[in-house]
Every structure is written in C-alpha cells, then in structure tokens.
Amino acid sequence: MPQVEREIELKPVVLITGARQCGKTTLCKMISEKHGFGYVSLADRRERAMAEKDPELFLNIHPAPLIIDEAQYAKGLFAALESVIDERKFRTGSNEGMYILTGSQIYRLMEDVSESMAGRVSIIRMSPLSISEIAGRDEPPFEVDIERCIERSTSLSTDAQDIFKRMVRGSYPELFQKPRLKTSKFYSDYLDTYIARDVSEIINLKDKDKFLRFVEVAASLTGQELVYETICNAVGVTIPTVESWLRILQLGGIIHLLPAYVERSTVKRVVKRPKLYFCDTGLACYLARIFDPESLRAGYLSGPMLETFIVNEILKTYSNNTESAGFYYYRDSKKNEIDLIMLKNGELTLIESKAGTNFGSDDLKAFRLLKKSDYTIGPSCIICLTDKAYPLMEGVYALPVTSI
Image 1 (spheres, rainbow, N blue to C red):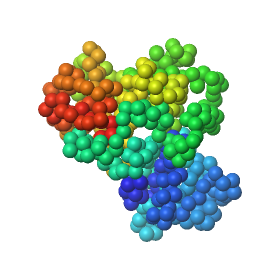
Image 2 (tube, rainbow, N blue to C red):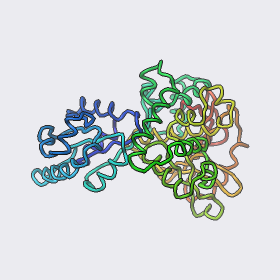
Image 3 (cartoon, one colour):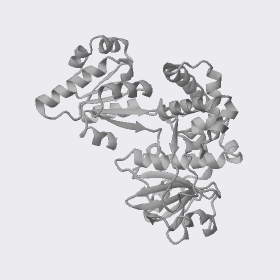
Image 4 (tube, rainbow, N blue to C red):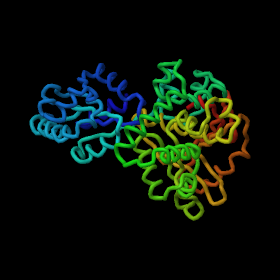
C-alpha cells in the first residue's frame, strides 16, 4: 500500500497490474476505505455497458476520486478519462489522485493506457504475497544489516520443512484465506482461466496443449539462464514463437527476467543472457508436477526453486515499498555465478542462495571475482536453510530465509 499511497499524490491515474488472484481488488478496497475513493467494478454488466456506451455519463455518476476495477472491459472509457483529467488540470491546476485502475487482463489495459493516457499514469506491478505479508510483520527493503537480519529471523521462527511447504503451496492470497483449498485444485483452475481468458484474448492460440507444454517447460527452467533453443527443442516451436509466448508470460505476471551484470571489469568474460524466474513457486511446482514438499526437497529442482523463492522475496521487499535498486545476476564463461547482485547507492550487495545449512569462505569464490568492480562491495550474504545467522568472512554472512 505505501507505494500506491505515494503515487496517488504524484499522478492523476495509478494503474495496478499483476497476475490473476494476487490481491489487486483487496488492495483497492483497503485504499477505498482509508482514502475515501469510490469503488466500481466493470465485472458488473450494467456498469460495464454504461462505461462503454456512455463513458461521460459513467464518470458523472461515479466522480473522482474513484477506483475502477476490471477496467479493461470498457475500452471506450479511456478517452473520457483523459478528457476529465485534463479538464481538472485546466480548471484547478491540479489533477493528482483522481483514479486508480486495475484489472486481470493486463495486456488490454496496457494497450488502452498507452493509447490514451501517456504521461498521466503511474504503473504499479503487484506480486503474490511475501513471507512478511503472510506473517503480518513489517517489510523494509532487504539489506545485509546483520543486526536487523538477526532480529527479523528470530521474530519469524520456521524450519526448512516449512520453507519447502510454503514453496509448494505458493503465495496467492486465496490459498491462505482458505486453508482447506487443495493446492492442485487452485492451480488447475488458475491455469484454465489464465489460458482460456487472458492468453486466448490476445493471440490466436491454435494449440492450447502446446502452449501449456511451453509453460511447463519454462517452469522446469526457473532459476536458470534463458536459452531459447532449449525451449524450442522441448516444445517443438520456433524462436519467434517462444519470444512471443515469453512476453505474454511476462505481461501476465507469471515470469520475470533477471538481467546479467556487466561492467567494465567483467565485460569480456560474462554471460549476457538473462535468467528466467517464475513469480510464484507454487505455480512453478504444479507445472513441474511437484505436489508435496518432500518430493521438491529430494528432486533436482530443489535448488532452483529455493533460489526462485529467495530472489522473489527480496524483490518483493522493494516492489512493496517506495525504494528502488538495480538487480542482476553474475555468471562468467567458467560458470562462476552469483545468484543476485543488488546495486544501490553506489554499492554492490552480493547474494547467494543455497539449500544447505553449513558453509564457509570456500563457498564464496565467485564473490572474489568482483573485487575489481567499479563499485564498492558492501555487506553480502548466502541466504540458506540455516536457522541462525553466522559469519563466513569479513562482511559476509550466512542468513536464514526469514531474515529477508
């Protein structure tokens, strides 16, 4: 909520996007109650018809400040919004905080916004719940501040088995609102809705089974470099098709890509392909046919899924706040790798994720490769399944997952 509250003071329109079921509507209702925004959903057929056929009347009946949920259902509304926003600016000199738009079909929303409201809108991308949101604790942007990390890890006690349970369960709000809801049932319905309603609306999906196979292959590659040929060979489609389908997954909040870290001291030896991550490990596990924590922990995806979980949690601490940082990964031609590099205030934080508990300075070989970096190397860490933080070498620590 803090990021939305900041943006409504700066822009006339805030567009909240994110994957299906990630809590956009719940967030908007909280904002409505706290800040006095009206609320209307275009899932209501009568409201939708009015917004499409007579948008000026619709906006007169529902004056700003207003939240419009499922806004993609009324393409004709966006030109009217532009007119009302500009008229307010001309008349009063100020038009901030007039509208919040949200919807599940991000592709159509982004197209409509690009056409009608360029420069008038701030876009916020929501993620599924973080471990801190689920636990109901504060969530500052992650930093390797050892005292704060120890305090956070001791305030949320959990063990490795609980972490793997959480990874398989996933982070969508409905799964926590309804503890008896079967995980496999939720994700089966989720995929059916996503493919039938979202994907099929923006492309002519002639072979839904092949697209589903593509998503399954992508899930099995979470936490790995994106090599188009690998996916092409597994699915039987061309590189342009894979590029198009990956873009759809990105827009739908299903995956994100982490760019490679390149600077003057590394440019000749580093891999430059991005890494692919699913935004939710529960969905990735379901697609990879992993249905219980024991199978995940014993299988080959144990490490990549844990890495996906940790990277996602760290990124959420920034997307859920008003601070920003640059995020990258490092890998060179000799396969030395650092899972996550954070660039903030002219300082690099190096972060490894590992499924074990006991590590030493020998596990930090890749960290030493950046000693000639243009930036200062700040406090860094291995985030792992240990239950207590401990030092590895000067300025580098092993931290529990719950310290995020």
